Length: 323
Image 1 (cartoon, one colour):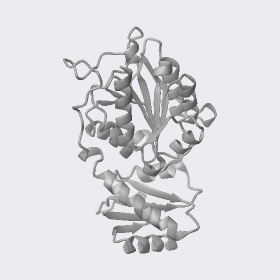
Image 2 (spheres, one colour):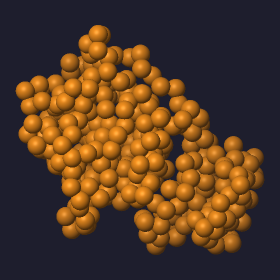
Image 3 (cartoon, helix red, strand yellow):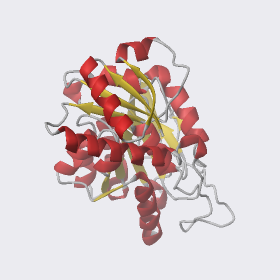
Image 4 (cartoon, helix red, strand yellow):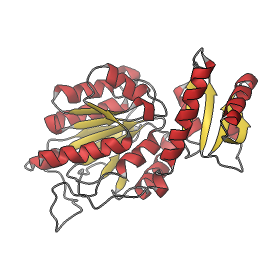
């Protein structure tokens, strides 16, 4: 287990170094966040342990995590009791490294399970149709910081014949969006592609909507993509996508909120819940940052919570019981 330390204060760097050394965790480097963002490291750790002030912006956090594809364990406003905090950090790191062994490029892809699909056509790519109620099963996957790893773990457990189409919103800078799509596509048997205007979602596929896209879906299932300017007053890009899917799919709609900070997805999840659809969240203890799923859970609308692997298993079980 190799861990890199990122902290801007000397006392934080020294404290983290002492904690990791006492836990027999190999330390590959100690840097400030500014140095990390502006220089290339010769050694890539298995995870980064990051100490940051509570006032840091979410944009700065996204810049940090976009610099590397390994997990980040980010701490803000640490607990008063350092012994409790240190114990939790060590346990979290061990869990993250164990999860990384199953992540994106190395995760075993399960394709043998079926969800009541036609045996002669295991990969269903036909467009959704208003006349075919089964294909109105649209699920939104929403994530931010820590999301790429969680999504790879989740999608690796989804068979490619599942009768569900996924719309994915990963809160990531548009400059990294194509790279994110390619890496996720390589990590799963499901085709992962950027959503384009005029497209139909297809069963067993994942369409990725960017932060700069305004997403809507017509009654015939056709997607409309146009430029947008995200505004907190009008809600987040993720909320807009979820609300569109809720309106189209109604009780067949679903949403899963993965790791991330803030309250993105809460408003949209309420829309899914009002339509009778499923609202699920990643379990807080399996998140890099539990803000997004935690806020949905506290809103009292989450019907299920679990690790990415358990979420995938539960979705396959649900699909099997409904078809």
